[in-house]
Amino acid sequence: MGKGLVIGFILGVLALVACVYLYFATGRAPVAVTDPDLPFEKTLAHKALHARINSERPQDSPVPADEANFLAGAEVYRENCAMCHGLPNQGQTAIAQGMRPKPPQLFHGTGVTDDPAWETFWKACNGIRMTGMPGFKGKLSDTQLWQVSQLLANADKIPDSVKTALASGALPAR
Figure (spheres, rainbow, N blue to C red):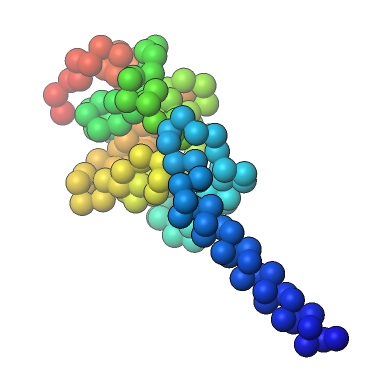
């Protein structure tokens, strides 16, 4: 009786693995941007992302949350982030509309202002697999990554000069 139960369990697991493999190998899995999500896809992806971020929590920001750093972060944001994540008082770009999952519009709604700067730093530095979010480590300096992270963490509190610079595209020289 016990031996049959073990064999039945092993065969059941092997059948499940074979079915999952065939589901993906035969092209039935939703891979197009317009396809619906897999069951639990978003939940599992978020759990994995947040577990990884929390296990590798970077130090607190060495860059102060001040106007000079917000302006520098605005320049980095406009050049590297705005095409997907948008600008204040502007709609989604064509690039953002064609992505799945949709990139959050960081200056609309809550954005990432409820995320600590270190979490945004981790995401900008490492990227997020299978979302279109690239990693900028080695492409931008740590200072630039912290400046844009501070900007986004404080997006609901930035001074008018930074809002104007973001909205107009006329960023002042550093």
